[in-house]
Amino acid sequence: MKQIQNLGITLDYFIHATSSGGTHSDILLGKELYYPELEVLGINVGEPEGVLTKIIQGIIKEFIEE
Image 1 (tube, one colour):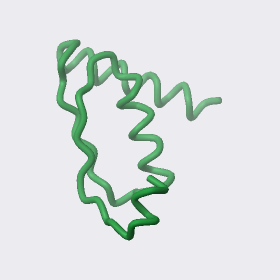
Image 2: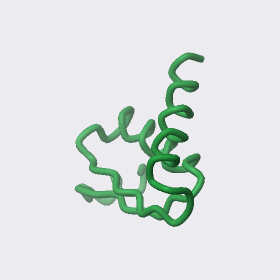
Image 3: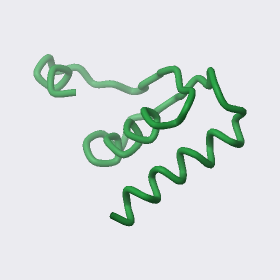
Image 4: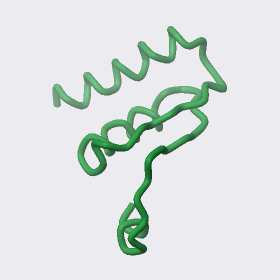
């Protein structure tokens, strides 16, 4: 993200593949800290959507509670 800032580029969307939820959770947490206006779109390539959503929510909840 620092490179993007240095180039003066503004991102509207961050699109990535997600399967276990770990990277997606980290991206969402980083977004809240550094780019709250950024839209994050995860393309599910692993767990069923409902399962993956619960995994991501659990990881974020653990982070917030620490």
